[in-house]
Image: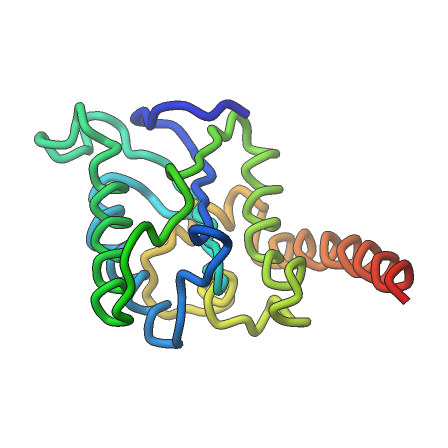
Length: 196
C-alpha cells in the first residue's frame, strides 16, 4: 500500500473525513448530492467499484481509466476531478449551512491497491464500514453504500460485472461479506464487554 499520485490504469482506495471529525453529510439529501457530484467528476476518469458514505467520512474504491480512455484535457491532470468534486461539494455545504473553512480534513487520502485479493478485502471493508462504526447493525440495508447496487438489477454507475466476476459470482460476493461480518461481530462484542 503506497499513498501516491493518481496514475492511469491503477486501483485506489480513496477516503477522507470531516475537518475536526465533524459531519460532512448533515442531512439525508447531502448523500445523494455527493453521489451526483461523484458521477459528474469521477466517472469520466475512473471506474467506481464500491463506496460508503458515513456522516463524518467516506470511502471510495476505484480504478483510474487507461490513458487512452481519459479525456484529452485530463490525461496529465487525473487529480483534477477529485479536487473539483470535493471543492464543489464543500462550497455547496458551506453555502447551504452558513459555514466557512475546510469541510474535509487536509488532503484526500488514497492508497494504491496492488492485487486482486486486497481489492476484494477493501470492497468488503468499505461495505461493512457502517457496522464497524456502529451507524447500523445491518450493512445490507444501509442506504449510503454501494452494497445494495450489487443486489439489484437496476442500472448503476458501479462496475458490477467486473466486481462480481472478481468474487466469482453474487453468491461468493455475499459469502465474503457474511464471513467478514462474523469477524466484526466478534470484535465488536469483545469491545462492548470490555466497556461494561
